[in-house]
Length: 171
Image (cartoon, rainbow, N blue to C red; front, top):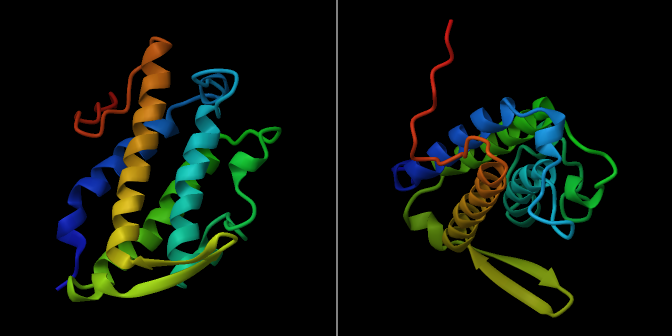
């Protein structure tokens, strides 16, 4: 039995985020909450990169090579604010990182959520279970989706509430 069903709401966040980002132009992607915070495009890139970092770099799950993140432990898109990303790039990054997430959810079992991985940090060794990292990633995605949604709504644009139905585009 996989853990996919335990995280069905996370897929809604992913769907809403990718659908919402796909419709954003460069000016909207450049919006930020303040001069000291990341623009929308960097926040979205950070979401995708964090998934790859935790699942591939820390947990050694396969799939990093299918993403645009060659070394997410050292270099993320949000580290290069002088290279803004387009909606197509962001959607591709979200989708490729989500395939890694989905693969883990499909393969991991409830019993396997207690498997521990070590992460060497300058402050010392950290120990993380699969369960703790999945919780971290769900919260991380949700937090940043809310952050993007707030930036958009403060600028008079449609938010990205994951629980709202996705509007159907006229044919």
